[in-house]
Image (cartoon, rainbow, N blue to C red; front, side):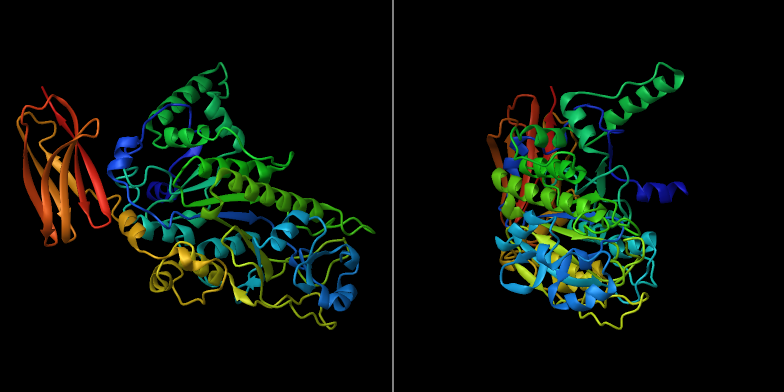
Length: 527
């Protein structure tokens, strides 16, 4: 791999390799800076993506009871007994796998949306290629160098990583639980996410625990690398602060890797981390054989996986509610493809095409979107479920109605073509473009001073977008020292002098406010 390619694809950080317990304070993380740049926000929304790796059998997950007769002749060795299918309020045609009572409750409580038969034209049946299509938003015959969420985050924070962290965005833009950061977050210049390799590594960070190094030359080198990495790790302290601020969480199921990951996500969100997108993973859905136990089709590998998924999501949702942040969070499941309609002779299913997915949270529009797939008794082993909804329409809907991105920007920048918006979440939270205006300027220095440090005089240079413009100077305790500019101004770059009028040496701040945008720059008065 070329060095430039490696750097483009390298995440901001990986735990535990880079989070060694060093406490590096990110600029803007202090209460004073936060207060000086505070703006009201009604789009502080978070999206949590749950990847079901391997290709989930949708027909045994969301069961079309009105097609049961046809299915019984096509997958009799794996089909769930209809008497055991979990019913859903308001419909007799559709139910859930019996291992999913928690998600049944969420559906009946109005916190779950089922989207039927999600896929894309000309499906690919390779795990690697199909995953690549899902995370990049590509057509099946197209290769894209960036991911859907990487393009979104680049739109929201177009200057990243230059100038980050800063007073507007002190935290990672995206976090994945896992040592490898998905191409989902690949931006045009760098990967926009950071990775936490596993939940244990975060708890080790919080407790100051580090895996011992061997007493060898290689061990000494590893210790040195950890030290240097810790010293240069920008986000260590903000993550630690967020996690340690949450001292109590709800109950999560034991022996459930997905639940362990979601518990970390809930803790970071509840602790105030501004991160917009999280990705967690549950694997094992490539059920070519042993999907069910012969004669007890509601048990087996698939049932175990769905039980973990269901109990983990419900525990996560309840925890968010207890932490008081549930209204900010929407979750979505996805798998690279579904399975074939006709089962095989090994109590399993082979790679297929379309499958249902789940969207969950307080702000979802509950119910079932789409119709049950129609199953013909003439279906052959090579036949697949047809797509009802393009997966990129799901992305488009969440980008538009949850992250408040204008549709023209979605079409031209993120999904690169027009996809329909689907009724998935309540769009009423998207009432203002103020948050994007703030975020998009976060990595641009709109105010600075020179020389810095200074003794008698410094020049404060600032850029205004036009209209009412305010330039102030505060001392290190937050006391207002002087108002330099407070007037309507034409768009442009300006310079104003600031004189030291018997001020004590120390740290001061120059603050710019222009519309919804506010930035500060630190100034030092020397002795």
